[in-house]
Image 1: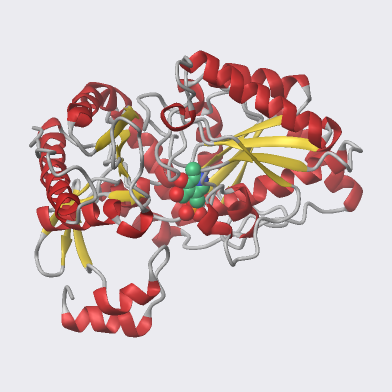
Image 2: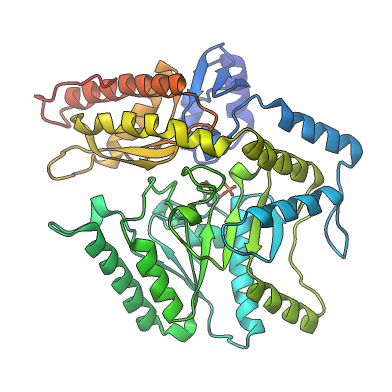
Length: 468
Ligand SMILES: Cc1ncc(COP(=O)(O)O)c(C=O)c1O
């Protein structure tokens, strides 16, 4: 146990998200007390390089004073005001204008929420309200994808395509469909090209829409790059072909930019990286560099007009959160967007990303590595039991989680999505810090190889390779 006092108090008092609660009672937490740049410090003084920017969010690192000061200034001036019933705040108006000015495609209005889940929950309701406004009460189904991650509230968890988010939570809800995960390495057929795979994905989507009845299918929601499902990049021509199918059947596209947005891919948005033309965009995380909770939904003019029409008919647009557009969160988000520009974060990402991507690809020959993938400052290394057959380890062996734990030992925090290890460091990371991240990962990877050999999970002839 990391520290008896704090750890035992934590075990006694807290339910942890995304944690094996039983295991937590014996393992306890790593208690983090401070942050500095791309590092966080445990209460025992140990410094960890945060390889996942917290939860894919702390893009400006853990010690950006300008964000703390923006929050402080705003809290002294106006700590709370809401945006219900014709009220607004000056700071939130400024943020709305700023977001619309940098939107990847023309967007008409912004609706504020507190998280990615709330943003995606909101779009589900907007899609339904929109089609009711247009007099299409049957057009309500929303397509998501297997392995998608869109959050954990009742509707957004239903959009999420990961079995554990549904299992025993009695989800998904009605009217949510899941189609193929476009992971070429896993689901491409022998001899199939990426382009042919994308055509097969689009054909399969079209068949599903036809079998459901296109008059009942309202929207598709998608992350430009699938994040928590394993950092799965769209195969070549995927978005072009998928969007052609959606257009054919008058189906809205919703881009979930919660991870991809704000410079992560080496573009301002995932949408621009893949020439997507969404009707709605959700974002959170990098919007405030994770310093305060805030998310947003941007909608096209056509959608906005439908909302206006329906709210006039009903007498109210009855949706909103107490903290929609919270002034302190708005101030921090606005400052974050200003820093992305003033500090040239996009140019910085483009400069350092090749170091991370090339560094990760050097692990491709490692005996445990099946696939290395990524773009910009996001990537994943997928561990396999057999490189030739791509066979995965039995999840019960916990190979990915073992690597993460060894990473902690070596001073790096990473995240395992099954046996895919995700990399998503703060965008401000320097080249020397990328090298350190890779070095520490290499140590954890080789410890993992030693463990799987010891347990007889792989051919014992495999030799550890210390990639540098
Ligand atoms: C793509 C995507 N959408 C939505 C969410 C949910 O966001 P939150 O955890 O802020 O509710 C996440 C969180 O990881 C995400 O990665």
